[in-house]
Structures are given as C-alpha cells and as structure tokens.
Amino acid sequence: MSLDTLIKLEQATISHPNNVVLSNIDFQVNKGEFIYLIGKTGSGKSTLLKTLYAELPINKGKGQISNVNLVELKNKKVPFLRRKLGIVFQDFQLLTDRSIFDNLAFVLKATGWKKKAEIEKRITEVLEKVGLNYKEYKMPHELSGGEQQRVVIARALLNDPEIILADEPTGNLDPETSEEIIKLLIDISKTGRAVLIATHDYPLINKFPARVVECKDSKLIEYKNTVEIIEEQIQDVLAKDKIESEDPKDD
Picture 1 (cartoon, rainbow, N blue to C red):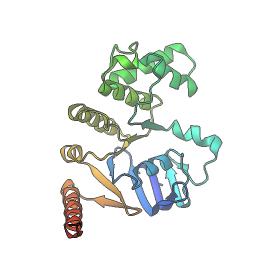
Picture 2 (picture 1 turned 90 degrees about the vertical axis):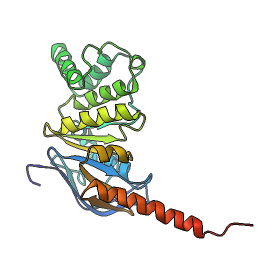
Picture 3 (picture 1 turned 30 degrees about the vertical axis):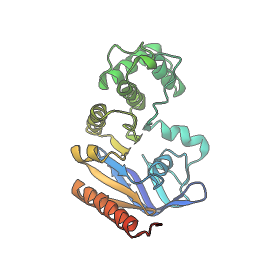
C-alpha cells in the first residue's frame, strides 16, 4: 500500500451476518479525499463502514486501513485501529448526564490520556476547530442538533485520526445545518485526512460535488460526476413508474 493510500480493499466479500452484502469489491481511498458513499437502504453503506472500523469481518479477499491488515486483525488490537479513526454517527451518542467537556475528556482518558493540562488543551483545540468555543460546559440538551453533531465531529478528531468515517451525519438535521456540517467535513479533508460519508442526501452531493461511490447489487459503482447520479436516480424512478403502470389493477 502506498504512503498516500489509507484504505484499500481487494476482491473483498462482506457478509452481514450470513447474507452476502458486498461481493468481490475493490476500493481505495487516499489522503485528503472526501468521498460520498450512497445507495438504497440495505445496500451495504453501513456494512462497509462497520467493516472499516472492524465491527464486521472481511469474509474473503484483502483489506487494509491505515496500514492495519483487517483480515488478520485480532480482537485485542481493534481498539488500536479505532484510535486511528474518527467515527461520526447520525444519532450523536453523547453521554447526556455530563457536559460537553466531560464527554470529550471521557474519550481521551479511555484512550490513554492522563495529564489534566494536556486533556484541557486538546479539548479546547478540537472545539475551536468545529466552532464551539466556550461551550465546553454546556450539557448536550442545551445545544441544537447541529451543535451536537459538531461535538461528535470534535470527539472524532480528539486523537488526530487519519480517517473520518461518517454514517448519515446529516440525517437528523435541517438543510441549512446539514450544509454547515458538510462544509466542516470538507475542510477537515483539506487537512490531509480522508473523509468517507454515507448519505442519501443527493441535493447536498449536487451542491458540494466530490467523489461518489454507490453500493448497488452487492458491488461498488464509481461515478464521474453528479450528473450521472441524477440521471441514475431519474432512470430508477421511470422504471418504477413503468412497472406500476403495467401492473394490472382489480376492477
């Protein structure tokens, strides 16, 4: 794997749990890339992300992420891999009984940080990066949905990961806030990190174009531009309408 390559899957097959979701796929992600992962519900978007952070195994083929061999990875080494990753979930998963500072401090302490001054400094740094200066002592319920998602992104940045994996990070947000989150993730990719975001929000993709990969029919399909994506969606709708119009109705 080259120095610029952070993710590489070769002829990889992934099942969940015994059902093949993705078969014989090849996929490569380099430093600084921002990638949309699209596809219908159940097509394999979340399955692929779970494989990359070692929640699901590769059943056949090869897989490496940040120079870690996913096929040979032992359970005791999974935490080591996840420290190299930043994971952003749709439902935030913040601890509701403690402040934003304590949420972030909890992660740092769990990953080996011990010195109070260094913990405080790092929390200040990541909150500044996501535009939440001076909100470290707010409780999660005191923040808007967009602000909570920024906290989640700050949490993902704590251990300076090479890769950010985001699963529908705008799914619970309004359009304006969604745009702000996408802009933030794009800015993060410009620092050299790879950002892979699973989404079904095609207007966002059209407004902020980048590399697009679709999970479809157990394969990964690459799109050259957003026009191809829009045309694909139109064809799907037309095909569905045709089937429905040909379906005989009861009198």
